[in-house]
Length: 300
Length: 300
Image (cartoon, rainbow over all chains, first blue to last red; front, side, top):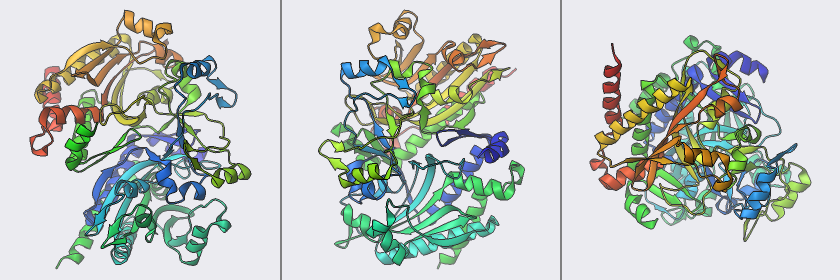
């Protein structure tokens, strides 16, 4: 932990012990260049940008078993019950040795964004699509872990996603095409990456039918830099289409997404190229080159 | 509420009943143009961008009496105690009629960002400055209210701030100069705005020495569009410098900030210019003009 921070502090990394980073200077510019690169790849699909909020309705998330599948990862947003006496009790001693001494909470109904793309499916709930829909969104995600490491494993981090909702064929074409683009970007960047089948980190995995299904037929593949997954390609089949009644020609749509963990890209790039910003590659320009080649190949 | 949403849905507004918006299409582009405009104004001071995370350590916030002053506005991030039995109990029935049926929480130590600039003071804790420091940061802020209105009063919203840490003279010069820039931008935009002295929304204000001090000597001025504050200019004197031991020539620094509520700008601009994107002004270009005039005036 201290090694990463010591190496990158001069270029704009600071670590908060609650599992978060502050970015400034060259490292913040690199983060923006990475996100620009992901956006360039999204543009290949003419993905429409959407900006989603921080909180997700817990009931909507539970429609896809989120709370039962990932209770250990979830962060909830809670506010104090607004009764005057309750607030006064709180202010009498708001902190003690174990942190905030909460008094009575108002009903908790919201989960802090666990992954950027959940918002997309909830937002398009009930829609009948007539063509494949490509979207892209960036959000701050919250994932509680037992320990944190700067840039690699954080309570809050930024995730860019490109999402496709369509027929199974359209979605698998999107996932294959995007994986090829991302692979071409890794080659431009001379980043050693291996694609590996993976599973989501379920609670009590061996009791989870969803985990067992993922093991039997991998629907998640991660681009690993060493042991660090910096991007993933995910086929959800029709689970979101079914839960949120998003249809295509009368049937639940298939969905798939490609996700990029922004801080992890910073780790991989500075691990590969060092802490001197002059040695860093122009990630966005490389993405434009990759996207240009792809567009030409697709041209008539 | 429904009126704003009905009017702006075709240009990319969606409302979540938990007090949040989803932005896409023309309205998302307008939001980005507004933020670009604020950044152009920040550039007049060569303000360095910083990207701060979502959570603030509660103990650090309480160093400036946040929890006792604003307990009714605070949102806390809580996670379930990670014990297997506790998580299993939770998954047995994660929801009931009153929302999430939380089982035992792990100690809560973090508050969701209440205002973008708090992070800046915590981040620069303990520093000795030798010159005025200008910074700018955008963050998602959380403010619990008794009721919400799309774009005007939300649980989560985006706030851009320009912050100055320096001597009292430097900070008051910064605040006066920025207020002039913002006023010039309002004139370019033909937005009817009045600047009004204001107070922060303290809990039990008449019992709060800080509220009484703000009443006696206003340190907060808001730019109001109708009754909606869309920007504010704030002088904190040395309260942050003192609490976080940020010094200049051996004394606590004075701090001040200018804050812009992004969603509220969307409300004001679409209220003034209507829902047709072709009628919307080029906010960023106007900010560049205003900033250019200011830079020329400052040139030798």
